[in-house]
Picture 1 (cartoon, rainbow, N blue to C red):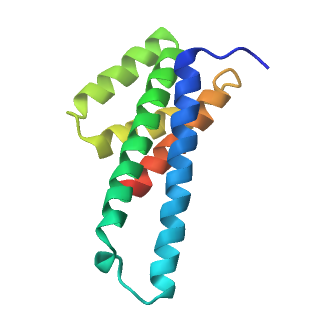
Picture 2 (picture 1 turned 90 degrees about the horizontal axis):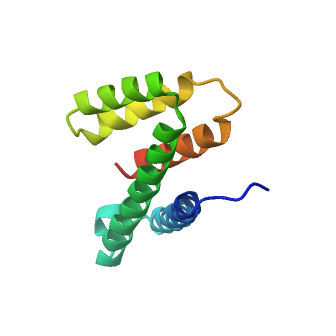
Length: 128
């Protein structure tokens, strides 16, 4: 297996943490549903957990975003950075731009980075 840089290892660790948090949230949601209790009546801990999930998912996306941008050729990188800047800091617009960039890429060289970015984006979309 190729040696990974510390930034990539951090991204994978953050992604694993975010996925575990999301799985726990889904289990909690299922329990609430089974008890016929609406999520808004959940104990305050659920809201804290949801906030932590969102933070982990966004941290993983930030790592994967940087990894994706760095992996792109100069022209594509400049185009993506310009599109992200035009999003004006709107997280949903930026997410759509990143996903579109990854989905348009068909190279095998960036396949792992593409998959990691799309998974991180999906996790963030769940908590937005």
